Image (cartoon, rainbow, N blue to C red):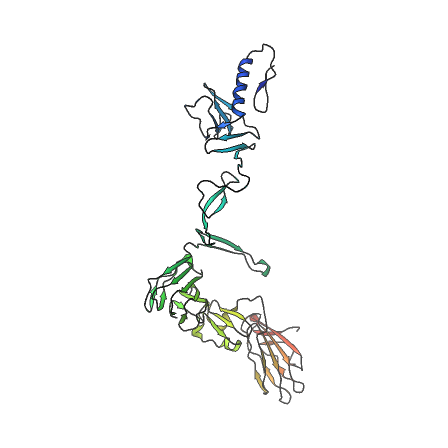
Length: 432
């Protein structure tokens, strides 16, 4: 009895003189003619109304049985449906590519096994990316890396930085870098009031002498670093004032070829200079903690950075303009900033640094000096006193701002350590 074989759909197993054998044999040749060297006109969602005999298409829309990707060939009178099997391969005239059936979809068969070849729309120097529609096929992008390794066409960069090992939260930063650098050759003269710089960097190349102010940044650019570059042969002065905070309380001179970094702080509605290269000071540099604490109130704008030379620490005013609002930028790393050796006196009031201070205490006063501890400045600040006198030992008295087991006389080379607890408004001796 005649049956249809499962692979390519040929008829077989004929019985002698069985009815329909001739038609089945003719259809076998028709299918073989299609599949032995399969040529497909195109992928279509609907079949054409005026096909030529032998025209074959791959139907991308569901047929009457709900199937897709079937091969449909016109025999002169009607469409013959051929179910594709895994491994079927044919040449599709449009888009002029070989395709093979993977059991689910028709995919392009690689024809070049050496150099990678992209589509005709690829642009010289464009970065390649995979085509998400057709699978593992490369396509050109709008991002260009030219022969000098310059990158253009990047619209947005999104990055995630995790510092969970230090107990910090994950920071997600999305920023548009379109138009990375603006060259401003039109600004000229002194005391110029300029619009807010909106690109990542601005290079001034004209006859600009000084900048008196910048306009307020749009909300989307609050906190984003802006770079100002002096592309002139002479200096440009950045005026410290209502809209620009240089961190020094004075005007900032940008030397030729130098640059400064600033950001817009919406809390004080001003641009704050936070860094620079080769062009004067972009913050306040101090020699030790005493100088750090003596910074004039007028220079303590929120965001001002202070660099301590002795210990190479970077500080910043944050959230206000008092000493208590100074934060150590790398505040997970503590050091002893300085040591202070006391002069002999009957009563001595100490001056501490911030976070950690080591003070040598000694006395030539008979019976020893009485030492008064100052109030701490930040919760967790630490104070260490090291005995430096063999004969007359100084005494730390228990007081309203000192919690310990009675008065303590500090012997030679004895180390007594305290920590400031803001909620108690007191120094608490370690090991009490």
